[in-house]
Every structure is written in C-alpha cells, then in structure tokens.
Image (cartoon, rainbow, N blue to C red; front, side, top):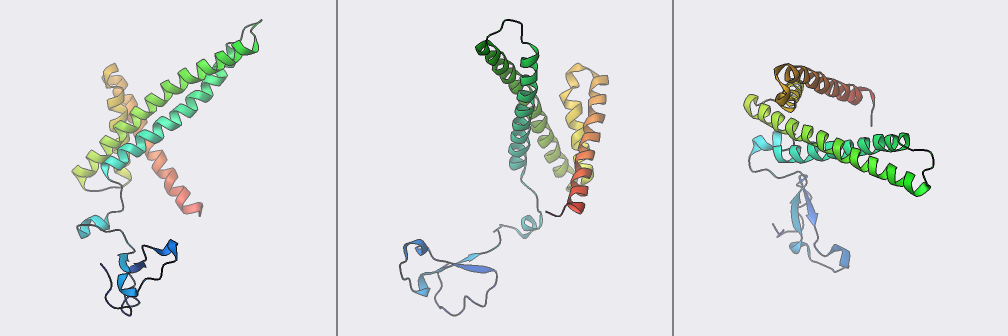
Length: 187
C-alpha cells in the first residue's frame, strides 16, 4: 500500500519503507513509497505459528540432499574401487578411465538409493504430521521406522522389520544429535 502521509511510517515497527527506484538515485516523494511488512505474510494466523516447511519443500529438500550426499559418497567409494582395480601394465589413460567409470557408476547408484530414502522419509513424515498434528522427536522416529520398512518391504517381513528398526534408530540418533549440536555448538 502506498503511504499518503510521510510522518506515520515511523510509528509502525512491523513495516519497512520500500523505494522501488532506490538504486537509480531518483528523488521520490514520501507519498509514493510503500509500506512492506517485515515478517512473512500468511493467510491464516495458524499458519504463521507453525515454523515448519511444507510437505513439498520437505520432499524436495530430503530427496535433493539425499541424492547429492549419496552421489558424493558413492563417487568417493568409486574412486577407491577404481584404484583397487588397476592391473599391471595399465597406461595412465586407462587408469583414469577406470577411476571415472567406477566413481560414476557408484555415485549414480548410491545417489539414487539415498535419494529414494529421502523421498520415502519426507512422505511418511508429512503423513505422520498430518495425522497427529504434531511435529516432534517421535514424528521423526516413526518416519524413520516407516521409511526403513517400506524401503525393504519387497524382501520380506523380516527384512522390513529389521530395516524399520534401523531406520527408527537412525532417525532418533539424527534428531538427538541435532538437539545436542544446537545446545552445545553456538553457531
């Protein structure tokens, strides 16, 4: 909204003045400046109270971070695998080719697997938050349990239950580590 008076903008602390031509050094009268809120705008006040990403943002974040982290870890493991596969009499060009092939193959494989884990985790976590209307430590643990169970469900009930337990423990450890890090590492 445009300001009609130049004197009332100092009284409102939740807004800031916006000058659309500020970088051009053009003199603009105060009546043409805009009051913009300093906090994010929400349609409903309930939305502003929740400090959480949406399900789509979670899906993108967990999948992307999982794929990127898995690709880097897989490429690193592939470099060592490529070095181990050297044979006597290999030229430098052939050694480099072995390293690149093995790191690319392992990077793709690990990235896809961990990216799918992130995708399943984000979906299960968003579902748990919708059902329970809470976002706490137990939500992450249940999402880890569900992720492990769904990821290994095709291999049977026993494998799914073991993977679910490992997923729950891993999610709990990550959340606990995050809390410890927040408490003792003041960044």
